[in-house]
Image (cartoon, rainbow, N blue to C red; front, side, top):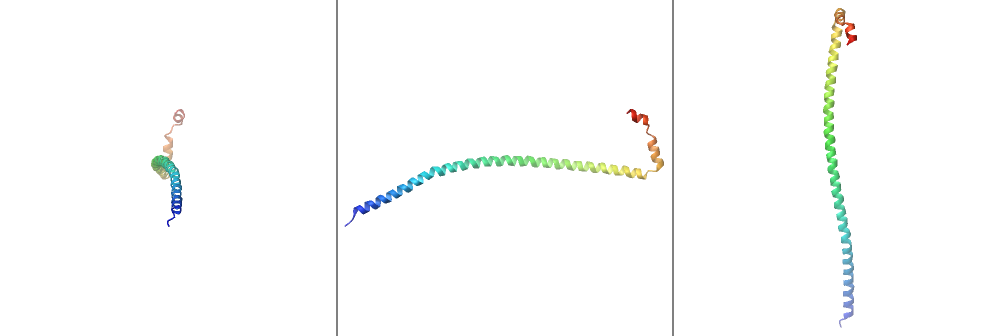
Length: 115
Protein backbone atom coordinates (compact mmCIF):
# COMPACT_ATOMS: atom_id res chain seq x y z
CA UNK A 1 0.00 0.00 0.00
CA UNK A 2 0.82 3.56 -0.46
CA UNK A 3 2.14 5.29 2.68
CA UNK A 4 0.71 8.80 2.83
CA UNK A 5 2.56 9.69 5.98
CA UNK A 6 5.97 9.41 4.29
CA UNK A 7 4.79 11.42 1.26
CA UNK A 8 3.35 14.18 3.45
CA UNK A 9 6.44 14.21 5.66
CA UNK A 10 8.76 14.37 2.62
CA UNK A 11 6.63 17.07 1.02
CA UNK A 12 6.57 19.14 4.22
CA UNK A 13 10.36 18.85 4.59
CA UNK A 14 10.77 19.93 0.96
CA UNK A 15 8.48 22.94 1.50
CA UNK A 16 10.35 23.88 4.67
CA UNK A 17 13.68 23.75 2.84
CA UNK A 18 12.32 25.87 -0.01
CA UNK A 19 10.87 28.35 2.50
CA UNK A 20 14.18 28.64 4.36
CA UNK A 21 16.07 29.18 1.11
CA UNK A 22 13.47 31.75 -0.05
CA UNK A 23 13.67 33.66 3.24
CA UNK A 24 17.46 33.59 3.03
CA UNK A 25 17.40 35.02 -0.49
CA UNK A 26 14.90 37.71 0.47
CA UNK A 27 17.00 38.79 3.42
CA UNK A 28 20.09 39.06 1.22
CA UNK A 29 18.35 41.06 -1.49
CA UNK A 30 17.89 44.25 0.59
CA UNK A 31 21.52 44.03 1.71
CA UNK A 32 22.69 43.62 -1.85
CA UNK A 33 20.52 46.47 -3.11
CA UNK A 34 21.68 48.75 -0.28
CA UNK A 35 25.27 47.85 -1.11
CA UNK A 36 24.57 48.60 -4.77
CA UNK A 37 23.11 51.99 -3.83
CA UNK A 38 26.13 52.74 -1.65
CA UNK A 39 28.52 51.73 -4.41
CA UNK A 40 26.64 53.84 -6.96
CA UNK A 41 26.84 56.88 -4.65
CA UNK A 42 30.53 56.23 -4.07
CA UNK A 43 31.06 55.87 -7.81
CA UNK A 44 29.29 59.20 -8.45
CA UNK A 45 31.39 60.98 -5.84
CA UNK A 46 34.57 59.46 -7.27
CA UNK A 47 33.56 60.58 -10.77
CA UNK A 48 33.04 64.13 -9.46
CA UNK A 49 36.47 64.06 -7.82
CA UNK A 50 38.02 62.81 -11.06
CA UNK A 51 36.39 65.69 -12.96
CA UNK A 52 37.77 68.19 -10.45
CA UNK A 53 41.23 66.64 -10.69
CA UNK A 54 41.03 66.76 -14.49
CA UNK A 55 40.15 70.46 -14.33
CA UNK A 56 43.04 71.11 -11.95
CA UNK A 57 45.35 69.16 -14.24
CA UNK A 58 44.24 71.23 -17.22
CA UNK A 59 44.80 74.46 -15.29
CA UNK A 60 48.25 73.28 -14.19
CA UNK A 61 49.16 72.34 -17.75
CA UNK A 62 48.09 75.79 -18.94
CA UNK A 63 50.17 77.42 -16.19
CA UNK A 64 53.10 75.20 -17.10
CA UNK A 65 52.81 76.16 -20.76
CA UNK A 66 52.60 79.83 -19.85
CA UNK A 67 55.64 79.58 -17.58
CA UNK A 68 57.54 77.72 -20.28
CA UNK A 69 56.76 80.46 -22.81
CA UNK A 70 57.81 83.12 -20.30
CA UNK A 71 61.05 81.31 -19.59
CA UNK A 72 61.75 81.05 -23.32
CA UNK A 73 61.18 84.79 -23.70
CA UNK A 74 63.48 85.48 -20.76
CA UNK A 75 66.16 83.20 -22.25
CA UNK A 76 65.95 85.10 -25.56
CA UNK A 77 66.21 88.43 -23.73
CA UNK A 78 69.24 87.22 -21.75
CA UNK A 79 70.87 86.02 -24.97
CA UNK A 80 70.27 89.43 -26.56
CA UNK A 81 71.81 91.18 -23.56
CA UNK A 82 74.83 88.84 -23.61
CA UNK A 83 75.24 89.45 -27.36
CA UNK A 84 75.16 93.23 -26.86
CA UNK A 85 77.61 92.93 -23.97
CA UNK A 86 79.97 90.83 -26.07
CA UNK A 87 79.71 93.31 -28.93
CA UNK A 88 80.53 96.20 -26.60
CA UNK A 89 83.48 94.33 -25.12
CA UNK A 90 84.72 93.50 -28.62
CA UNK A 91 84.35 97.15 -29.58
CA UNK A 92 86.26 98.21 -26.46
CA UNK A 93 89.10 95.80 -27.27
CA UNK A 94 89.27 96.98 -30.84
CA UNK A 95 89.31 100.65 -29.87
CA UNK A 96 92.72 102.29 -29.60
CA UNK A 97 93.90 104.03 -26.48
CA UNK A 98 93.36 107.38 -28.15
CA UNK A 99 89.78 106.44 -29.09
CA UNK A 100 89.03 105.46 -25.49
CA UNK A 101 90.53 108.68 -24.22
CA UNK A 102 88.40 110.73 -26.61
CA UNK A 103 85.30 108.76 -25.63
CA UNK A 104 85.79 109.29 -21.91
CA UNK A 105 86.98 112.86 -22.34
CA UNK A 106 83.48 113.83 -23.53
CA UNK A 107 82.06 113.10 -20.08
CA UNK A 108 81.77 116.08 -17.78
CA UNK A 109 82.03 114.94 -14.18
CA UNK A 110 80.04 117.92 -12.90
CA UNK A 111 77.09 117.02 -15.15
CA UNK A 112 77.13 113.39 -14.07
CA UNK A 113 77.22 114.35 -10.38
CA UNK A 114 74.28 116.76 -10.65
CA UNK A 115 72.11 114.26 -12.58
